[in-house]
Length: 300
Image 1: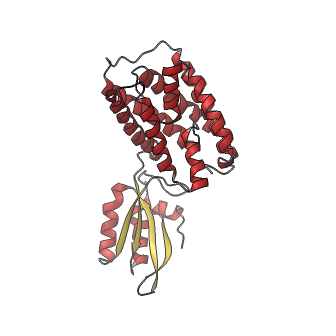
Image 2: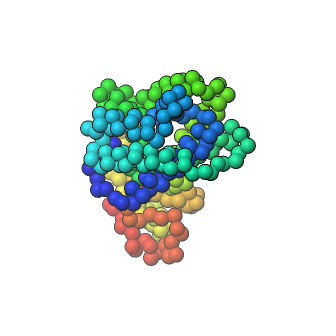
Image 3: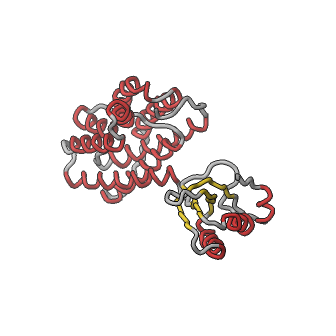
């Protein structure tokens, strides 16, 4: 399932609305205005618009609602509500932006159009996904195939996007399709950045016989909490304590010095951390690391 039956929050609805507004703005004022294609269900609505002159605001609902009904069992209550709301919000904002007499003057530069289309679409979709929403479409189809046939969502989404973009060649030429692919590339990067943010914490696992000394210095000199993990050597079968802590990138060199001063043979694994939740971590430099040490909880 996309989600279990989590609590519905009003903030989520507000942010999903914002994300849909940004996505729809890019679709109407950039993609449609510059005759660029799009992947997924949105791409199908653009094909329908060109050949049958049906407003994408309407076709978005018509195409998505049956998919939502079919896929409701894979969504969960909260995700179902958010998906319905996201679909209706996207449809509304597509209708809204088509009636606002505002145009971005980019002098018909398709390179700029491709960048901006990916930028607005990526930020908008990233916000929607970050707050637990979705605008339906191929996400639901991919989830159904994953659950019923064991096919990964990534493969299904790639196949469906390729299929829709190939069909879009019926109304766009190769040149504009290349700029559409540029927009898709920017879109994917911006969605990832929006979801993960500029968060760049480091998770560090330290395996050393001097684990207690290293842990004490990390808490004293860096003001960071540590956790002890029970570990056992695969070859020696020796049991020992491993240290895990989360630090900011600027503190990484100091941590290396602490480890090296206590145990030059220590095994250290440094991991990128996209997000840290719960008590005890901030990028802010502690005003008094000694006092912070007293406040933090250390799990042994």
